[in-house]
Image (cartoon, rainbow, N blue to C red; front, side, top):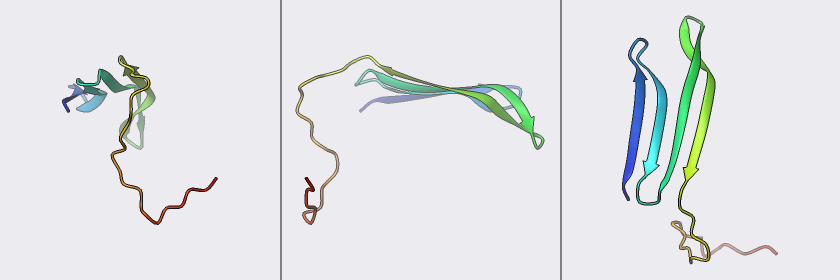
Length: 78
């Protein structure tokens, strides 16, 4: 798995204004943009937070293997 993380820092306040994580193998990414900073109790906080999700590759009808184990004590309820 190859993952790239980028953090854009505001040089004046030394606060993150954008954080992005990209899965380069799966062509997926998520980013968070922080904007319109306002002072609360003498500290800067973003008033606006925007999430962006990009999925560039979707596979259908592919067998999936879970990355967790189900306890043998588990009983299916129907």
